[in-house]
Image (cartoon, rainbow over all chains, first blue to last red; front, side, top):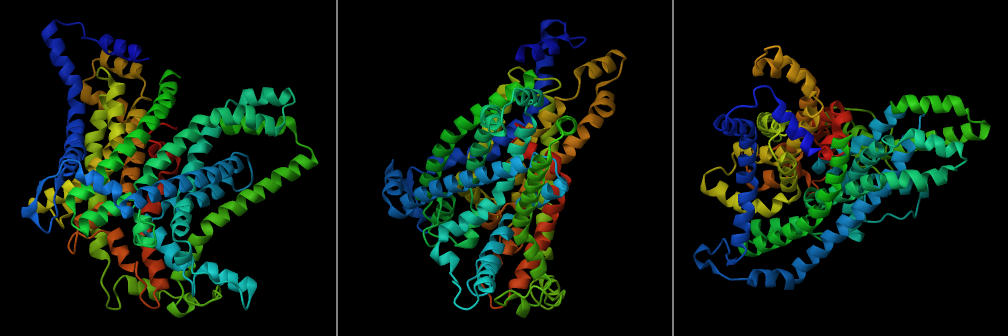
Length: 314
Length: 291
């Protein structure tokens, strides 16, 4: 399909000119692209290069004169520091839990919403709402309004149902990571639902109709037609969700301020350079995050490109 | 199209009594799920209209009298810090960066769809790959650069960063919208002697405008929500609305109603933009991969 596009360019009237105008023409075609491309590279890619360079230096911002080349020692420190190592593990745990739970919930909700029923549009709007709260606001809602041990809604409900002697857990200190995860799952389930709903609605309805004519049950249609069709949408949800959640800072910062073992890598990097002023260490941790993201991104790009090619060839 | 297909199916198969019973049970289940998801938000709305004393009871006082006190307090009418500077900063950063993003993304998308450069898919995927790298890894050099050039606590630093942050999404979204413009129409207009600006204004723009609007709304949401860079790069002067909200992280006595009011007011622009862009939301979030 790339070929047809190129042919089309050549077919534009006036395209068949002598070589020099052709070159001008090629640059004229490229020109609208260049500002965006250059801006992008300068603002987002150069800092990564700088991070990579800084990661090889022993550099504490409080002692700027002591800056010296340190080779790979920052990486050694990052990987042997128990707190930093723990934050790598926390990032993985947080991402996997949030992505998988919201994917599953999103799938169930998408299946429910894929049917016609009274007020479907209203329900869809209600389900999207959590995603449209500013992340800090959502985290504050969970931290203070829902989880507060004395007057939060959760303990209030437990109290109203159980009366005297009802359990009144201090949610955030008893299950800090789950508290962060719960608020993120609440916000990200709508995202998964939207992607999977789009997937469900792009199914071939004639194929399903034919399967039903042949006496296939709902379950058989789901397993043999819906799931295989949804596979790439599920993959896309997992990968995009992972990319967004790995980078999450707001929920961790707001709900636990990185305490109680919930510090993930973005929070740790923030803390290492903003509060501990360890520029070299923070950069080495940053490079590790980038490497992890590149691995994720390679898979993500593959999925997006297969969806994209299907879209183009349609 | 899908709705039509479903509609005819429902009519033609005519589900019997058990089938209809199951359908309405699933409808009710969907309603319950929707209500469960929106309940915390509704509770937040209700709490924001309660007095602080009523907001902090256990069990909760659902039917307590309503008041606007917490909104008055939030807007600084009772003496506290006013949220307006932060709101105005956020509005500046979000609106200006969104305009800049469109200014860069629309021509780029044009060069990737209507009159594509060679290897346009590679370029498109380069844009996407930059979005997948965590910006937090570039935070330190950006901070040092801002510090050395006097851009710390300056809202324009955020404008530039948010523009770059949203550019890949905008290019992808705009590419997928512009790809829907039929090239035959453009060629026909050119054969009729129309100049390029005329073609762009009369033929391309009307088809692309809804897409541009949706792209703008999504860029606006992402900019408005951003916390990490705003937190690190701004201080007193250029503080944005999410940074203002972080002032509520530590408990301050009875302040639940005020937290709710503040969170809602600051989320209002995003809620409005999000519902306006509802149909294109998934396309933007999935970087154009899902339509």
